[in-house]
Length: 525
RNA sequence: GGCCCCAUCGUCUAGUCAGGCCUAGGACACUGGACUUUCGAUCCAGUAACAGGGGUUCAAAUCCCCUUGGGGUCACCA
Image (tube, rainbow, N blue to C red; front, side, top):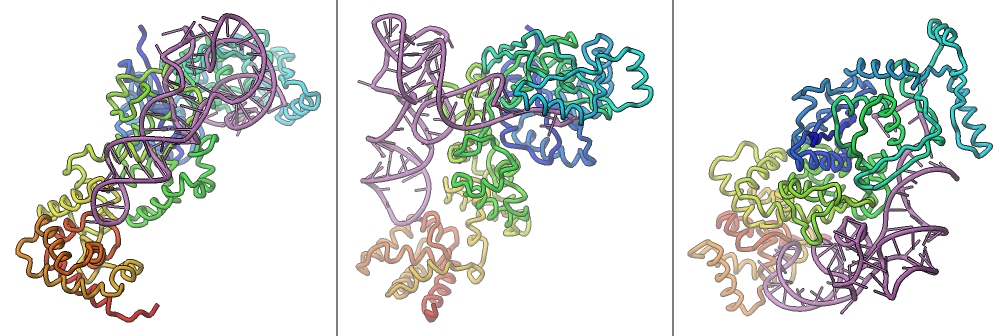
C-alpha cells in the first residue's frame, strides 16, 4: 500500500471560504484516517503583491480548527517549495519534456484568430476544436518565430481519437470523448503556466495519492488526466465531492452573492448577529466578516468542535442516526465511500444545534476564558479579571446555562458589569412592567422585604418572594417581571433569583430605587 | 447551446452498489402538549419525502430506458 497523501491548494484571497474549508477538511480527514499526510500548497500564480497578508487568514482558519498540515507553508517539507510562484522550474522542465516528445506545441495563432474560429464553429453548431495551424509550420519556421519573439502560447496536443476515463471515488465511472476537447493552453504568452498544468505537475511531484476536490472541478479532470498521461506520470485517485450550496438554495455558496444572502431568511440572523457583535468588539460589521468566511464563526464565538461537526455532516454521514461527532470519531470512520453525491446546503440552524451541544460539554473555566476575551475586547472589562472577578463571571455563566450558545452571548449580559446608575432600561420593558397600574407599589413593598432579608441566596430569595406573593395576595407574575426589569433593565434573562444573588443586595436595592423613580416619571409618550 | 454531474420529509441524511427486513429510519426546523417567573433549555406527541412515465421481476426507493427538473463547467481564472 502506498502512503495516502492529500492536499488542499488555496489561493491567497484574504479569507477562508467555509465551503473550501469543508473540502480541506475532507482531504485532511482522508489523510488522517489512513495515517497519511495532508499537504497545503499555495496557489499564488496570480502574483498579488502581499501574498503574506492574503494568506494569513487562511492559515489561521486551519490553525483555529486544529487541522494541522504535514507539509506546506511555515513547516516546509520534502517536496517543496509549497508556493507555486516558487516552482517555476518544475513547470518549465515538464513543458520542455512535452514539447520534445511532440505532446505539446507552440501555437502562434493570435487570440483574435482563435476567437473567430470559435465563433465560426458556433455558427455552424459544431463543437470547437483547434485548427492547429501552427502544427503545419516546419521546425525552421517555428524556430524563426521563436527567435523573432512572435507571440505564442503552448498548447497540449489532445489525442482526439481516444477517450478519457476515470473511476471517481464519489461519482463512479466518468468518461469523456477527447474528440470534443479543444487543445488547452498550458503556458501563457508571458511564459507562466496555467492552473490545469501547474496542478498536475505539483500533484504528481508531491506524490498526491488522492485528489479530493469540489465537484466543479470535475470538468477539469479530463484535461488534467491527459496531462498526466502525456507526462507519463501515474494518475492519482479522484474524488469529486459535492459543493456546498447557500442555505435554502441549490446554488453554489459564493462570496460574490453575499448581497443576496443578506435577504435570505436562513442567513439573515447571522448577518444581524455579526453586525451586533463585531461592532461591539471593534471588528467592523457583517461586511468585514460574513458567514461565508470561516473567520466569521471564529470571531462570533463558535467552537471548532461545533463547526467541524457541522462541516463533517455536510455531504457525509456515519450511519443512519449519529449526528453528534467528535473530530476523533470522524477521523476513525471517515471514508470516501460514504460521501453523498448531491450538493449539500449549509444548514446554519443545525450548526447552531451542534454548537449548543459542544458548548455544554465545556468546563466552566474554559467558558470563562472565552467570555473574558469578549468582555475585554468590548471594553466591558478594562483589565484582566482578578480572582474575584473571574469567580463572578463564572457565576454569571453558570446562571446563563445553555443560553450561552456562542461566546459572544456574554455581551448580552453587560448589565452585570455596570453600576446601578449606569445600566440602561429598555423602554418597552419599563412601560409594560414598571409603569403598569400598581406595579410600582408592589415593587416598593418587595424592596423592603429584600432589604430586611436575612439570607441572600437563591433558595431563600425564592421563598421570600413566594411568601411575599402569598401575603400580598397577588400572583407571582405581578412582581417577578417588575423585579427583573428593575434590576437588569430588561424583560428577559436567566433565573430571577440567580440574578438577584449575583448582583448582591446593595446593587439590587439601588437598582430598584432607580426603577421606582423611573416608574413615577411622567408618561410623556 | 455542447460536455458532465445530480434527484428520498422544508433542510441535512439512512436505505440504492449485493432488489424482499421500508406500511421508508434518524437529526434540525416546524406544530401541539407538559414543565416554567421571562427568554432559553428539557421531556412527550405530531405534520412531512422515494420528481414523472415506461419496462425487468413473484417482488423496485433500490436494476434498465425515457422524460422532467436542478446544478456545474465551457478562458492566455483558480
